[in-house]
Amino acid sequence: MKTVLFPDWAYKPAWSPGSRQVQLWHFLLELLGRNEGGAIGWGGEWGEFIIRDPERLARLWGERKGKPHMNYDKLSRALRYYYNKRILHKTKGKRFTYKFNFSKLILVNYPGYLPPSSHQQLVHRAPLPFPFLPAESGLPLCGGVGSLMDRAVQPLPHPFLLPGCLPKPLPVPQALHGPFPFISAPAHPAVGKTEPRESGLNVNGWPHRSSADWDVNPHISWNLLGGEKREDEDREGKDAD
DNA sequence: CCCGGAAGAC
DNA sequence: GTCTTCCGGG
Image (tube, rainbow, N blue to C red):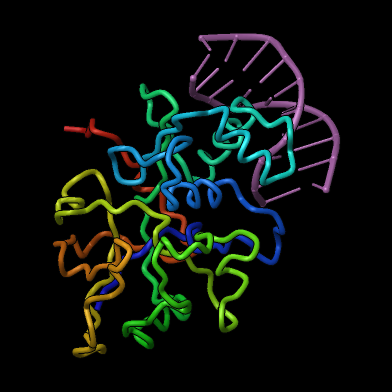
């Protein structure tokens, strides 16, 4: 069943036990997911976004954080700190354009990622721990006070994301042919056939697909949570030739 | 505009 | 640890 999901940082809840404040990338995802129009929007590339109104975005961010003097200069400094953390890249040459680092995909199954030693255990489809809801349901997506994050039904052992926060690209399987070193699960012999439903949860354009849709090099090293392989460092349009 | 060091808040 | 603030430099 091979499920391809998102990088480790993307699974950190907006309100992790350690940090009681919203994180900037969550905030950005929230705005992008809401398609709130104006301040920020998805760009052409997978994960790329463009800040259309920098000062307005800064004002919104400042309001969220209780920092009335926030501006784009300071916000962009925070974005720059994401470079080293490998959460963001700058799309060079394009003004106000950054890109989320979705190049490192994480292979996990929802009720908890599986450590490399025991990953053959729960290799079956796992439903999301929260009820689906359309983006129009009024509740804020991607966390925030009073959002789904707070009213999650069960204690969640693992961080999670909400649908609608991420771009919906990949109309075709050619994403893998690009510069993205996507990672997928190798075929596990122990699994047998466990494919209850491949529909997954595309209800919101959630890019949750079986990697069988894409032909993947099996020898790509797949790093799980905590793994820090840096073989990707994805490029834009210019690849080495 | 964009970059990152430095210091400090929390 | 995650920004916020300030800033010299390109």
